[in-house]
Image 1 (cartoon, rainbow over the protein chains, first blue to last red):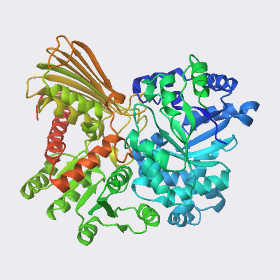
Image 2 (cartoon, rainbow over the protein chains, first blue to last red):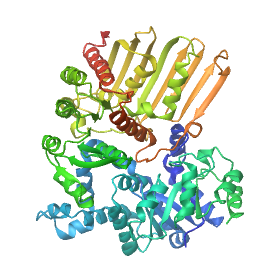
Image 3 (cartoon, chains in turn blue, cyan):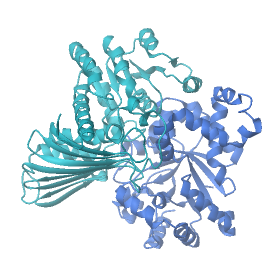
Image 4 (tube, rainbow over the protein chains, first blue to last red):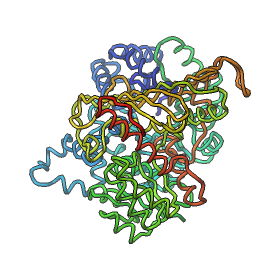
Length: 289
Length: 341
């Protein structure tokens, strides 16, 4: 069962879709991990026991703290988003995609077990793209594997790249691996929901969990709000709605009235950088679910 | 169906291929790269794609209708020449070349063949800069006096590896690699640059500059400065800021907003502040892979190839940017001697 309300993570790591300067300020505000834990614990006490989690290096510190707490380790549902793409984009500027993949694979236990660098196993492995993709997922998930992983989302940059290249097999491979190895719900983050649903029809993936931006303003909704709404009527999916307040342009009441008038909206991500208004926000959402 | 081929399937090649392949009537037919690892990877995930480890063979065998070139900078001109000689329209990642002299022959060839070209200065397709351009074109600010601008990212805090940090392969450091986005925007918004004074500093890098400060004199009589670095902490993403100070007010532009302040109401704009944030300006795109601006850019290129529509950022424009970069490096090499573009 997918949680209804999830705490978002962007505000903790400096992501802000209205003003990057605000994002950078918030990253400083959450410079101490304890400040992040305070928000997580506050939400838990409000019965919001689920959160999105990126694999940002600072998220690793949060994961460690969660592991130390009995109640969080057992009961806080983690919805992991892999990979933290900004890190790899910067790395690609320096060493290129090939070296990123190689360096990451060297870190995996699979690689060391095979002793592959002794026997040229790396060469064999890189010919087997499908195994390699699974290993890269494992590499990203590893630090979080002891937490209560409910779902693992493929980052929209990769979902949408597979979509643009018309590679449904990659999405299928990801879903299959997440299900089998982690017993978690495989999920996709996308900026192109209608188009993605059309692609997924060509795979065995049924009623998928999808995270996408949707709000009354149509901000960050592609190709348009109308086409997005049509896709919700047409396809079977579970929607985890993000950017529901359009980067703060909409007031919660108006935003959630619109959001929950749509079909398939199962869950919503809420970004909180303080506990002010959090109680009102949660109760506003709970009116509808 | 328009057949598209891509030379270089690193980060940018993958992005452009993904966008353009998704457009109606465009089909990615072939890619070339020197990495067999990457080629085998895409081939096994997209079996009907033709792969080549030699771009010349690919052009001859596939005869594509359009080509994307996304390779290290020193390869741009020779690869674009191969396309130009065959009369194939091309989209080239920025910057154009390590220096402008290297690109002269390409410019002449493209001109003689009247070929559609585009260079990847994608910031022109961000909503806030398009809004700024539209505001400036109304003349509401009156004469532009000066511009203050910065481009920063927290990227490099030790000696970098790879072609970007080799002077010979990239042409230089933060100026040519990243500040060219800002130089392109300044030229687009304020017109041609006449003179520059440049100061650069290397701190982390051995061969290229990590910090640069440039003063511009524009042909219009405006002046201004740009400060750039890829080694400024607290900038998770590349951030551009432009402030334009003018007779009747000022204009503040970054990736997140465009803010206009006017002393006197004019041309339908009120006096005081008018602000546009991204949510005010957003329009959806048919496919978004790395941001809507990359999509609009790709759509504009394909449109130009199909229907001959002009693009805003063609080879000629990228050549002008390149000449400004050359002048900045020349000036910086002479202790900030003012240098004509």
